Length: 332
Image (cartoon, rainbow, N blue to C red; front, side):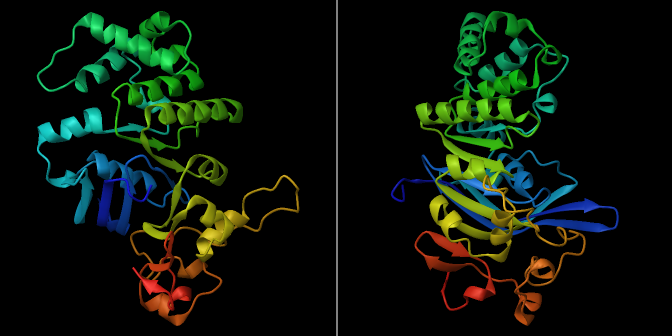
């Protein structure tokens, strides 16, 4: 895996939102990379900036109020922030696809499934090549069959309101994979579904990306899903990446106090009482804490944590942590 070419690289990405009263400093110098064929998890509490980071990759942040004062985003070696409209269309069409967390909001209620799926297929076609109605129809049928939806002809004529939540999510997965992307971003693909349907959708997603050898960024709150479906994990807290490790290492030896807290809150089948959780809450992005943003909630806080933002320290070849507890390790 480590010898595969670099697919996506983010350097020192800052994202702010202009609001009444000042600026929400959501992303605070994020670094991220993944290689072709990797399955990468991105975990953290609600509101920590995971979706903002992914929308920045696709350049779909609302600007304004969003602002990117600093940062570089490279896809296949090219800076997405400097791409022309045509180049960006090709990236969105055949390079990167995204499954949004709410299928009800992702699908337009006034257009049929067939109209929306057909528009995606036509948008992703090679530049200058107009697909015939029959070609679009056949590809749409194939996309719905791939996600195990019965009677695709009827579904293409249906509207989103006529489908269940699980069916809508499968349609969204079919739309994302119909473009044959190099990178699939799955943003909480099972959040709005009950646990049984969520399991079916995630199993389907795992099978399809394996068959197509698609690279994946999986955004989720579920550490169980991350453990099962990813090769490597980024842990995000309040707009900062606090730990990066190959998946088995992260669960066997979590280093950052925040990661340790997250893992300790996972319910165990053997019981053992109710987890205490992580005290406090994510900080106000208008006035974020100085130094390490986790220090107000950290059981190991030191004076330096309040004064300086910790750099990433390399604990071993596959494990990095941004915490002053590991100052004796190699700085990245």
